[in-house]
Length: 261
Image (cartoon, rainbow, N blue to C red):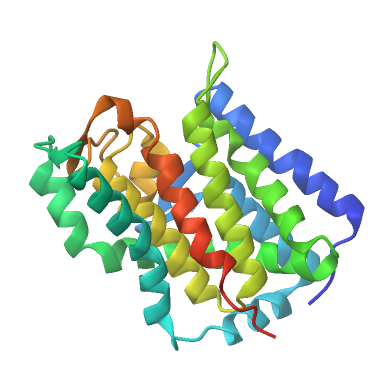
């Protein structure tokens, strides 16, 4: 796997988030669909860059490392946060089953269509895994450099334009989630497990608790919806903290995963 020099990494750190900010600032779509497959534009651009920089061999190595063993553990990691949060909120009587719009069209149908949504997102997760794994093998600060790249890459999603405002609690939740993803990359070498963990964690959070983020809903769920209230209605005093708590709980199990040699 061809290593990335410091200068190239710094350019990636500058150009990719910069493009994403441009897309968001001018209200341009920063994701698209191709034959059903979903692509976050800057991830695709990063994948194209990596192909021309290091050649097809990098992707061959990544694809050869795909394994379908021990995937049951991934589901356990993914299910821990929603089980804990829902149980705690029900015990405190701070949550109840909601009656959201599109309950059947989006909510229940998304459960049935989970495998399809996952397959439609799998190529872009493979591209992202290839880039992050290349960065990890290129530098000593493996986890930190991947985390920094991911943080800057998705930062525009938590900034509102044209009057610039930052969504603090959404940002905190994203920090925990991206830390979990970076740590998962560091400890695991299976791109399929990475894709399953990343996709399922976000997918469950969106389905249960809803979101007003059009990119998240259309990438992870159905591409025709712009808002979704979630299956559950949570007490307003607690709703702000749901995503930070959820993604913090997603991070904790990854900390205790044994690193593969």
